Image 1 (cartoon, chains in turn purple, brown):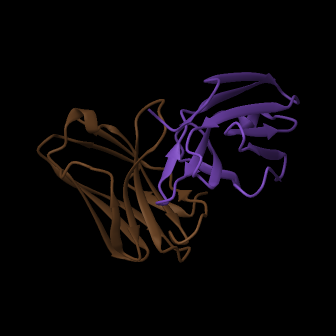
Image 2: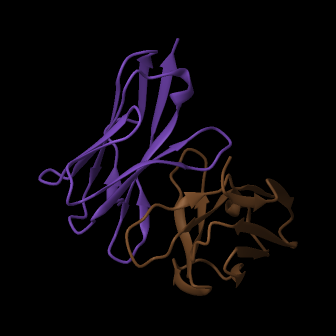
Length: 111
Length: 114
């Protein structure tokens, strides 16, 4: 099975609320993780990354949290906007530099 | 707008046809990748090129033949494809494969096999 997965396949939030998208991984040797956003008809767009020597990293309106103890990754989006509606994938980079994606979460933002 | 450009955006071909997908990047990246993505599924790695040499082939059938003519271009030659090969084919690039760094994706070629 896949080494990277997601707890929820869909997430629906109200505009202005904060969103949290979760991801579990199983390969404890993975040392680099990426979140991608994929809009309909587009390729995955890089959002934010984090290395295993960190437990938190912030970007513009986004925060990634890494809990290596339980092999859990999350993406927090502040003040979610309609333009944030998309499928979000977590991905892990294994030791041979192969990027493995999780199943994806469809985020829907309601106005 | 993505900095990885893929052409064509859409391709319909018969099972006996030969066609090629093209990918171009001008970011100076020395690693390039082909992924296959089926509907409602995550991308799956097919090939990795590092410094114009094939470094990873994820047991892809020989009807898919990658080529890297130079550091900016990546092709995927298609021949005798099957209906189950219909998918979105994504190209990506990264600075190189020597250290952890993000891969940047194009918007893909949507391939339909009749």
